[in-house]
Image (cartoon, rainbow, N blue to C red; front, side):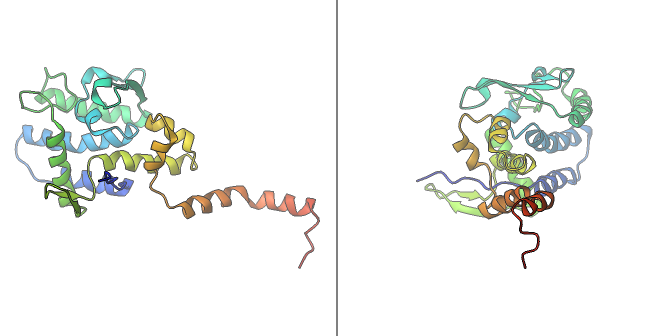
Length: 231
């Protein structure tokens, strides 16, 4: 059976999920941090150019180079064994610093960017998936997409929807530039990038046509071909 591609989350939906996590009432400094950690993981995954789930929950503090505004992506944290650097947006540096201050109060000796009390010291795929699923339910975005061969219910959105969401967001922001989006997503082929651009073809054609036939250009064109007085 062909693997089902998770739909993309919009920026608005990402914000709704984070708000659902942060609005959960908790008591104590430790639980307050866990709430912050969970929300920031999603925030981090999106704004660091659509990180893969394992690149999020396995990130280490020393992977951050805030001075040079870049984040080191370890090859062991993705199936492609692809190590790379992801630029940190200017506005995001202060957000990371604020998060680290809170993190250091609870886990001052942990190497993990998103630590926990388990023996591993960081979350695993199951932990991250469970946290994400609960946040979806609280945000009113959870629904079953299909039932797999084992009879397990699979949600419409999953942690990979964060990456798909950024891919779609970036594709629009770059003016539907597939090559730029491919570089941002760290894909080896444009075929992979196309999977992450959840935009109807008509919407792309509509935007490109509007860009091609700008009013000023049309005016010049009409003058050149002598059609100004055609009724």
